[in-house]
Image (tube, rainbow, N blue to C red):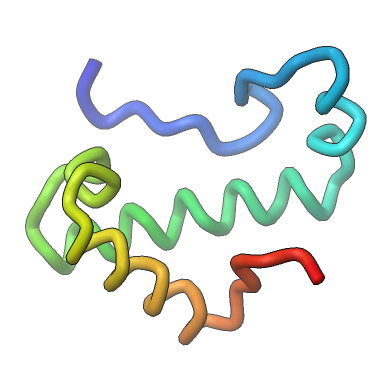
Length: 75
């Protein structure tokens, strides 16, 4: 299916990890990342799924996220 992105509670998790993902800040972060992926992919003129498959685009997207203040690691 083209151009369908999970952005909230519809992500696939296990019963073990569900407790982490159901919290509002985590849900919001997922939605924020998906929205930024759409913006980034549109700017690159590629489908969002191409970003994950291409190492250069993925690195560029990660830098794009960092530039927007999105943390990519838990500390």
